[in-house]
Image (tube, rainbow, N blue to C red; front, side):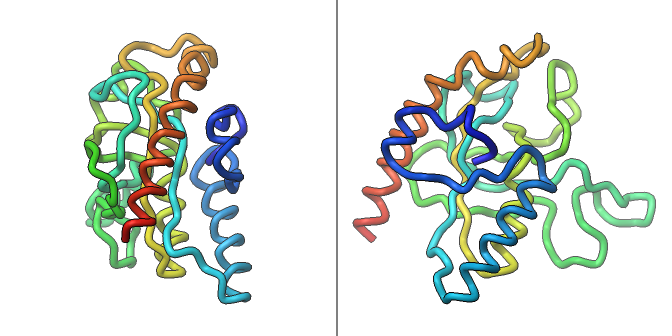
Length: 191
């Protein structure tokens, strides 16, 4: 998770997350260092979950979705002949597939270092936007740890009107993300 504002009482009753900080750089550093430390003691996780809020103009506010793929909207080396979203000289597709163990609707997520609002959604080829999941996915790939994404839609249909536009639904998303975590726990116990 990025920060404590997304980590309400329902989630607190279930687990203690790694708080990455906001944005792709903070997420990559936090997750990369954590996985490196875990690898040193042979305690890498079987699955990681990128969990939190997201913006969307296509998905219903207050609902939680499972992420089937994530892209990096900031990466654009197209002037050098690379496809937008592909990091030059790395062998990865524009859309990195994620684990989808739950029987719930899946969406495509776009990660970037900017907060998306209003008409800016028209420029993004994805159902939802966040600021961390692609960075977490790349850190997980480095250590061969599968990643899944669970994101609740906190904002998106219109222009953001300050931080309150993001925080307004976080309590509801805390409850619904906790339900998804319970669902995941059940699925993992059955496998």
